[in-house]
Length: 352
Image 1: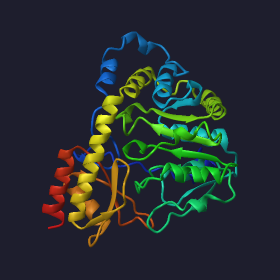
Image 2: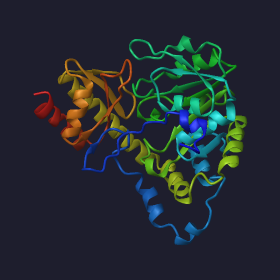
Image 3: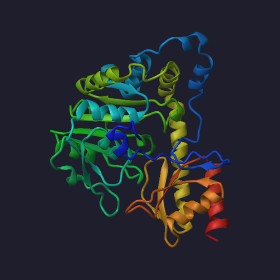
Image 4: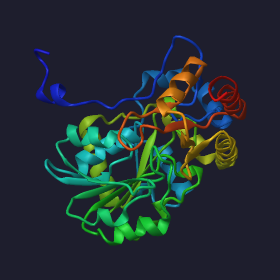
């Protein structure tokens, strides 16, 4: 630690989901898509000319921006692309907030926000969720520079309506509103349709969940041109080549393959709703998830106990040992076969 900065000494990094290599698991702990990406995108990857690899990628990411703008019916200049939505959020902290600025977000939400607040020396203002884990919308109406909403929220999976999001924006026109929509495609309504109405709104999405490209690291933001320009200034001052050529070309193809996108996300939603009913029959209860995961607890068994027993039997889910949610499990939605096996293990080996 002799040469560490004070920041490196003091910060507590983000804790990612387990990626064990000791044996093969049914992996329901990191909210990955159980289905492969668009076959058209895979075909593009396989057919790429080998000579592209010796050249730098397009720093403007023009091809994928055009695809996003077409699908979301926005101008290309209203789109920013980065190396995963986490990077886009990090760039947003640098582009819009200065040291000491107050940023408001819930006590139970994506756990990267507190890490970024520490990293970029901003002040976090915690707005506790209601007892039922729904958002306390009025709690955002306090002094601050920005608000971050995850919609649907993580790890609860509860979604705000577009009207609720707009009410937060209308009551906080002096703040930047960032809506993190990593899971929006599984049952919520995107706030993208509001960006031309409010110049303080930035919507961030990812290819990792609904488009099955977690390994390619593609995230994007949609907002007014002034916000997007600030993000580009930060990116080009940090690393102009945040996306590689594979990500740009495959991502653009996947974005345009709306038919496959709809097919797989609907399959996940159908499995989610079926498995929730199955778990309720086994004594579980949980939130009304509009994401690609369930957030549930058992009415008599401890959450950590179930988590450990599932792992012993080859199933990984996510357990958060944190206040208010330390009896809940976050269960990513896998294939029907994977989810059926989890139910079987619960019935035969854990809840018997």
